[in-house]
Structure formats: structure tokens, C-alpha cells
Image (tube, rainbow, N blue to C red; front, side, top):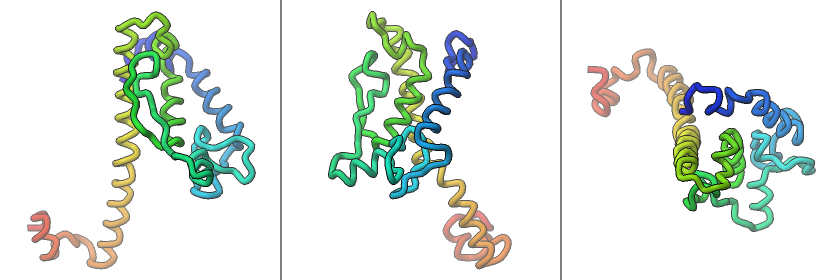
Length: 171
């Protein structure tokens, strides 16, 4: 996480610019719009003025093109490392890079310190993306499963013999 120094934290340094980028993206596709094919709602992933509204991934899929882009984790100016990422997610990750200080993003003089800052910021953004993509759905799923098991087996369902044998929790 970036320091709380307003000069090093682009969100703290310019929250208005961050809000403006988000607002412009949302307005360009229409507030509350979604892809008619898959339901994608992130404004950066939707194609402005498309009729019907469609996301980049669904358009590429319909054209028989790859749905993956190569994401330069640290930014092109800082490192050659790139990973394949679905195009909709790539557009969001690239938007995160816009929040970095301009000097780090562009690194015109190839400063090794700015390159390191890009590597760390990119790693952080990518880890947050992976955590959201891979793990964030699980708590809601577990909560719904608990409700389902409670309705099937009653309160304290985990104390039933078959669950205790699996987990050892109810003993």
C-alpha cells in the first residue's frame, strides 16, 4: 500500500482526478449500463456507444479474436514482464496504473528507482486483482451454503455425525 504522504499517493494527491476518470468512464457508457451478453457492468470494460451495449471481451469473442491482452504489470516503461489477462480485466488494471504518479508511469529517463516503484505498485495492483477475482466470491458462497445447510439440517448442522467426521468441528 502506498504511503499516506499526499505527494506519493495519487489518490490522496488528486482525488478529484480519480473521481473524474471514474465519472467520465461511467458517463461514456451510460450510468448503470451492462453488457447485453454477459452482464459485465464495469464502465472501463464496456464499449461506449455500442448498440446493443457490449463489453470488449464479448465483442472479441463474437469476432473470433483472443479475449486476452498482455498486461505489463509494472508498466511498459518500467519492466518487460507481462501476463495474459482477460481484456475486460486488463482495462481495469490499466486504469489502476493511471492512479500512479505520472513520473512512475512514464519513467522517461529510465530511473531504476521509478522502475522499482512501478514493479511494487504493479505487483500490489495485480495481487489485489487476483484476490478479488479468485477469493472474493467465496464468503458469499459460504454464507449461502450455511443458510442452505441450516434449513436442511437445522441449527448447529455441523454437529451432525457426517460433518463431524469430515471436519472434527462438532465434537
